[in-house]
Structures are given as C-alpha cells and as structure tokens.
Image 1: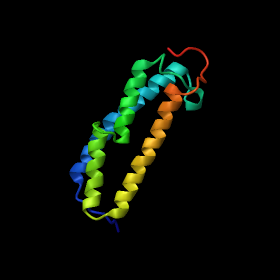
Image 2: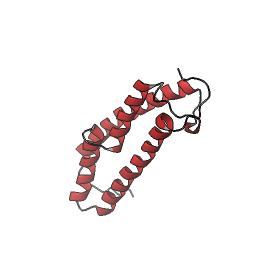
Image 3: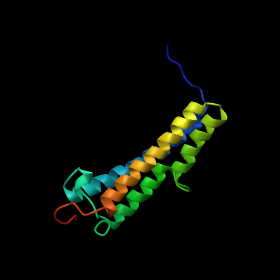
Image 4: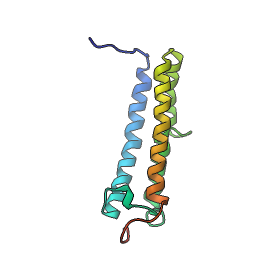
Length: 128
C-alpha cells in the first residue's frame, strides 16, 4: 500500500522542481568548467581558482546562493513555498526535515565554493 502525505502543495512542488533544475544546471556547468580547467574531478586538488576563472566563479556562486535559498534568488521562493505549506498544514516533522536539509545544503555548497575558488591553491599547472 502506498501512503501519501497529502500536503496539498503541488504548485509549490512544481515550482521547486523548475527552479531546482535551472540552478542545478548552472552548478553542473560551472563544475564542468572547473574540471576541464584543472584536469581533475577532485575538489581537494583545486583551490584559489577565482583569480583565473572569475566568470565561472561568479556564476557558480550565484547558482550556489539560489540552491541555498538565499533571498532574493529563486531557491528562496520555491523552498519557502514548500516549507510554509508543510508548516501551515501541521506536518511539523516534514517542516523540520526540510529546514534541516536546507541548512545542511548551505553548509556543503559553501564548503565547495570556498575550497574550489578561494581556498589554498592545490592544483598543479595553470587553469585555462
């Protein structure tokens, strides 16, 4: 038997699906650019890329801000809609899980930005 929570937030879910697709695509394009420039997939072999890859860094940071749900980016509005729907319908566990997940997402995406673009230089050669 399949059970559904039934939050009644179909519009909010579709809105988040669309915004998530766009900012996640932006992050994947930025990651591909960094991987191509550094010739490695390991974030631990990257660092101090901002001076050499300003356009990539800026667009990646904008995508990261949207993913974290920072105002006024699209992720803020779509996550807020889902969380407010869960809160107003009395699903406290889902609201808490969603809020915790949003917080953890902010932590890990900030870590990636700092390591790749502003952290200690660990890559060999010159990114192009």
